[in-house]
Image 1 (spheres, rainbow, N blue to C red):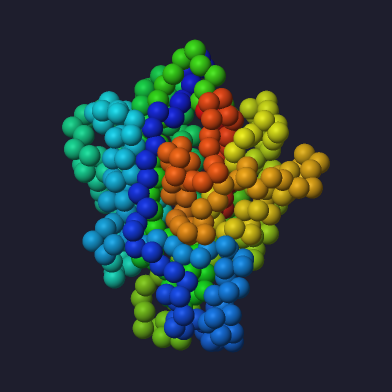
Image 2 (cartoon, helix red, strand yellow):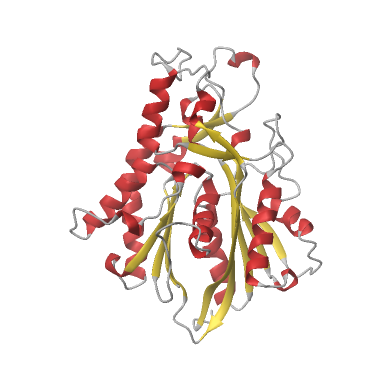
Length: 359
């Protein structure tokens, strides 16, 4: 391991679908409880409560002719263009996702060939030494891809790695499940590059998996509809209350572990880019993190949020948010030279990870 090598962000890109789905889209949906009983509350009340908890007002869905690999390709193309990097010089393409390509109207997962292979083909990269592979790791998949790419670079095995997070969650949601309103589509991409004699780059990371007790907080299951017996499809299902409790207990601890490994503390961090999962939950997590350092309050500007308009696109939320800030597209948010920032995510598995990075 060549410890003098740092993994530096050389370019970012994103693709946010232009199909905007407001909450009014769900006004006539028939929502059911897990046991098949109709939800007692009226839809306007359901929608208002949903907004208050998640902060989501609208989300983005891919066009009917687009697939997850298409979104990943467009985000990668954007990262390559904005960085000026030749795609043929990439050593790895890592695509984090959870459901592969799911064609409109099918609910069938398509993962052969890998999405990374499809992205490489779409980019027309001929270099056989550019290794393309997928990483299914729940919502923390993109952050874990950055961690893996960092090891490839620090070992001397790679000089440039393209890490993509892409998802079309709109294809695998149950229209009769209130939780389905949280999910969205999108893709983000980052190019990590080897650098020496610099303070920039990934400083430290920490990952944990809590499968024994918590693996079933996010699963695939049948529709909540009373007609589910005639529906062979499986949909993403979430135990929201238990997941919220789990995240508040464990995510702050993992963030602190990463900061401790980086030999720094929370006060040196200028921005926290956390997985845009749920507005209320993310705020509560950060309050707990600051609580670990004896603080009762925190400045919300340290934690940029775009979930209100983009929704929860799983692995795509953090790289999309990062690209938006670095390109000056988010009002009041900047990441400056020398700033230390933190990436953190939690999701299916249950997995948690955090990365400390110096810009």
